[in-house]
Image 1: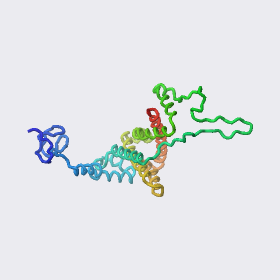
Image 2: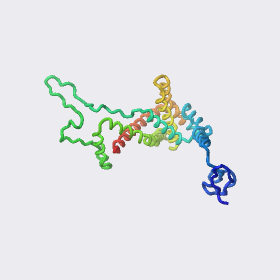
Image 3: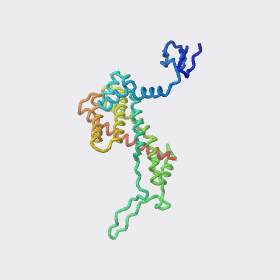
Image 4: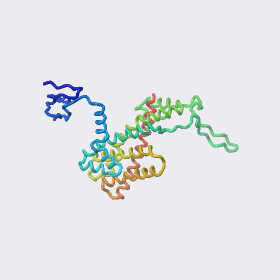
Length: 305
């Protein structure tokens, strides 16, 4: 018997073969891929039900995941390492979802990520002393002598790797402040999510170095990095929604204390052992964040054409 086609009315016999993998089927589900065998054209209500059930309810996994992520530092990581995984949202999916929501909320909020100075901003020397000539004024490039070089100076290795990069920076300098700010603002939202994601392996590498000799595998550190950074995205998103006041202060204190508490719960070191590792980790990650932001803005300048 040939496989039955989808019936708009919603009623037909079970086909002989699965429409997805073409394996022989007997019953309501394919034993090879798990797809339903009785298919029909879904209604609007079924689309909504599927969305709510899959993305919101997740059979209770979403709420249990968020409860442990937000209010029990390190508990979600320990649950995953203990093998209790089906009851929670996958770590990578959780991180990506919260990071996307965070950057979307930041963009919709209209937050200015790059503040450019006024168009006619200049650096001037202080008033000249009695009997001494005034110091020269440093202004826009148009005020410089015509024979003075106006090229951006880049490291020699970077010049060899990207010979056209200096010209891009020179062209960028010719734009007015408003155009420069718009380019940097757009580049931040274009490249920053990728940069933050690329920092996860580096964050895990820092943890690997800090906990050498504990027998922890690198994958365990990646798991911890995904959970703690997903929490950070949730907290920073809450900062944007909350007005200044006591609630925001509480959120900041919880964000500050969350990471060391999670580290102690997962890695089971003493207070002092956790404290110095937390301090080193924060410093290393802060340097990485600054480098990532500068790289993101640099990409925006390099490819603004």
